[in-house]
Image (cartoon, rainbow, N blue to C red):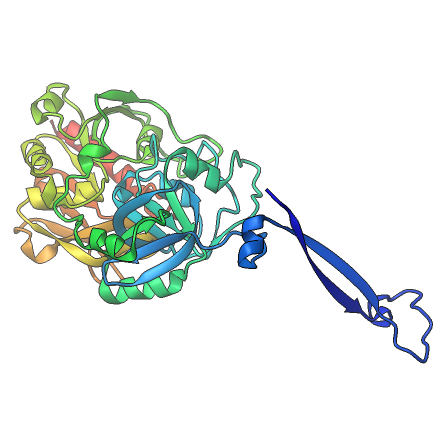
Length: 431
């Protein structure tokens, strides 16, 4: 490789630059000349371009509406298709990355500055990253946190997750709010044309796909870890009695299990296809139907499992579990325009009038008008009035559309775990 030099000079007035002992003025204005040289490759010299000391746009996000967005890549390379959703959380990007409910989706963070705390291995919410990719405005060039183990870029690259930055996330968010969630394609492959990527975005759909089968566990296992004492809260007045809970893993987050364990539950986690008969055979005090990704109508086998368990033991549904309960009780679910994703959603508890700031992540909701008599709407999202919680006292059913364990997000709704304990306790005493 031949190297040439590109020279340029800068003329500086010393009397302006030096604040101490400046040169004596003279009749003629004096200048210092600074010469700089930048190495050029033979290819650069041929094109007349110098090598740039900063990263240039090398990735594209193509949306199904025909819009194209140039960006810079980090993490993995390649081409990936997914549904683009926006998350309004200010912190907690690592918990978001490892939330299985984001399977099949590109998560766009509305908070512009991401990556400044790096990542650590204590905040993982599942065994891997299930999302399709990460879209951010500004990638931090440095990390500063006492728990930081590696940078966000290295973390994503090791897990084969694509990320892009230096893209107008505000403009994309406005587009998603106006038009609804859109299918998009991320690509760093220059060999693929814009037309090819656009066709990919228009030929794929997330509706009707069973995403739960790709995130659930393969076999039952026991969970024993509690919330660490440094991070625990609401620990006063807990019942010392132990309750056996079977948790259906539709994409369960670790912190749901930690909170249940902290409230005295002995937990067995089972796959999404685990037969209801096998669950009832162990005589649990309660059953948890967890959060999970995608369309509840795409997993009729899960709805049937819920139906077989209803009325036999107390049940608690969270997020996807809430939607499956809605269908199992005879209601319908629908796809929302752009869903709820973030740690700042206000919810009103209709039972006590209390307003909770909640963490949410879902694109589907239960239609309250479709629910049969006896099913109560217990919580309402104050942003759009959608159903955020259900109860059916006759069958010992309770559910929430949002995440009481947060991670990330506020802890306003942690009391829901105590309510589940009380439901199991009262049912056990009445037996």
